[in-house]
Structures are given as structure tokens and as C-alpha cells.
Image (cartoon, rainbow, N blue to C red; front, side, top):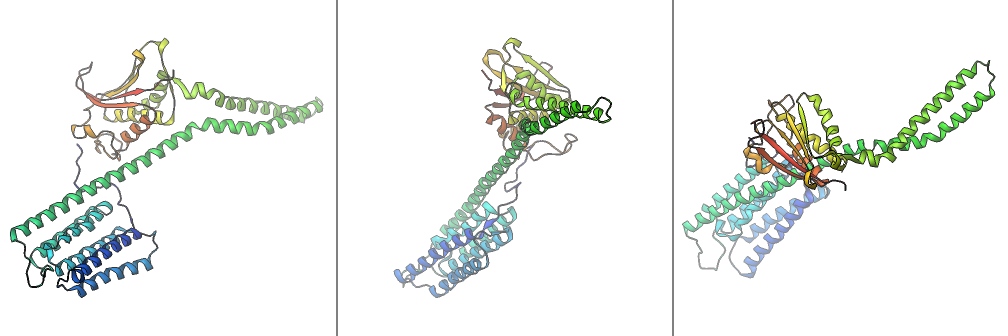
Length: 431
């Protein structure tokens, strides 16, 4: 069973560029200064505008200091970003205290630093900033200077209405912070998982390219070996039969000829690759994938449904090979007695089914199978340690990139009366 904490994050949080925070603060400074000037001088409402402008100037001064101290590309660690966002909450809280508290419609802006934290900082930092914002909101609901209003009149909202405003701000703060946190976390997980997939595919591609490298090496070595063969032949013809060096010259020529034969075989890989390596009958391909996995000790049974005369061919690729290997390996981990691989190419369709006799996919993750960093494997499931939950995601991504369609399900009852997990893979064939 997979449990998810509301604020659980599996990846390191993103370091925030100092230029981003400086720009956001400049926007806030312009807005705060504009609101104070319009209310104090545009509407002529009485308010402590000198103190408000001093607080705004402090924020502007901090921006100038940060701009001078750091380059725009500098990325702040989590603690540094937390302090800056805490300062923003405190500065805005004092401004709201001077301008009516929760009666001021701009009180909603206290949520902004918490939302920024939820997209880039850790769980603890976000909770602390949220706690600070809630404490200030609660304080402002009771203690604050009068809301700037028409001189001679005192604007006061009913107590119950203020309680409603307090509840609304707290609820909105919690909802937006949690939502932003989850969305940002899923985006980071997906990006990290795709990067891991690309690394796996690149490694498998290197193995596939070995035949091309061998052919290139054979081509480069062909000329010097031909020269050695020619010189050794001339030496052998020029030396008398009783010469001590004739035997050495004969050995040199025979070894040169052997090297040429080896290089001819290597060169033939590139010409035979299209038919032997890139295209392969489906059963031969499945057997190549399964053979190394038999050494893990779990019996793997391969069943085919279709006539040999109509056996289809598939285009091999590193992604297809790795994806299928990983799925079968995953089935081995959860199987109790054996793993079955069924290959069915009847009715112009090619479908592979991989199923085990284990407990099947847990109900808690059935609808999320294939998502990154999702795993139901426990430490004591096998001798192998619990992974990061990228295996199924990488396999699914690589197979789908090669035109496959995957379906994950549980077997309710099979021929042997046992249940287990089943993965159905529909592959493209070469006509």
C-alpha cells in the first residue's frame, strides 16, 4: 500500500533565483506605494502614510542590497528564500496593521509569500510561513488602526463579518498552498523521471551502437593490415628456405590473414544489422530478452499462440528491449512460483502478456500505475532493495515511444486458479 502525506516531497526542492524574488518584490513595492499615495493624497483619507512609506522604503532598500550583493543568476538556498519571504509577510502585516487590519481588502495578499514557498521550498518552510501568516491574520482581526476612510466617520465591519473574512482567508491560504505544492511537486517528479528515462535510453543506445563502432574500427585497420600482409608476403618470398627468419615471416603472414578474417566479420555486422539486429522474429526477440533473466532463479514460461508461418517481425530498439526486460524483471520480484509470458499474433495483432502468480497490483495504486516515483515494493519483498518507483514509468515511457500500447490489470482467476498482476503490451509489427 502506498501512502501519501499531504505535503510529502520525494525530490529536493528547487533553488530560487534571486532575480525572481527581487522582481516580485519590486512589483509589490510599486503596488504598495501606489495604494498608499492614492489613498492619502488622491482620496485625502487620514492615515499614517509617512510610516507606511518608511516600511515600503525598507523593502526597497533590501532589494537594492540584494541586487548589489548577488548576481541575477544566483540561486538562493531554501533558508535564504525562507527569510526573505518571512520578511515580506511581516512587512505586509505591519502595513495592514496601520491601514485597518482585516478590514483592508489587501489583506488577501498575505497569502502570496506562502504560495511562492509552496512551489519552491520544503514542507517545513512552507508550514512555518503559513503559521506566521495565520498568526498575523489572527492578530490583525483584533488589533489594528482604523481603516482609512472619510474624515469624521469611523468605518467598522461587524464582528461576525470579520470572523467570516478571517475564516475565508485561512481556508484560501491552505487550499492554494496545498494545491500549488502538489502541482509543483508532480511537475518536478515528472521532469526527474523523464531525465532518468533519457539516461537509460542513452545507455542502451550505446550498446546498440557497438556494431557500428566495430565496423568503423575494421575499416580503419584494414589498410595497415593489408600493408603488413603484403610486406610479410614479400619477405617470405625473398627469404631462402633454410633461413631462420622464414618461419617468423610465415607466422607473421598467417596472423595478418587471421586479423583480416576477423575484421571482415566485424565489417559484416553493419551490412547484416538491418536484417539480423534491427529486424527480428518476435519469438527470437522475446527469448533474447528472457534468457538473461532466467539466471535470477524464477521459472519463466513462454507460450506462443500463432502459426510459425505467420510469425511477425518487429523492429528492435534499445527502448523496446529495456522496457520489456524491466517489466519481466518486475514480475519476477513479485511472483511466488513462476512468471508467464504469452505471445499472441493471431488476427493480425501482436500482443504480449506478462503475468505472475503474486498478489497483483494493490488497489491503492491501481489507477496510478505508470506514474513516476510510485512503488508498492517493500524492503522485505525480495533480496533487492526498495527502488525509487521509476521502473514501471521508464518501461511504459520507452515502450510507448516505440509504438506500444500498455494495459495494467489483475487476474481474477487463471488456468492454475491463482491470481496475479498482468501487463498487456500491443506491439507494432514490420509488414
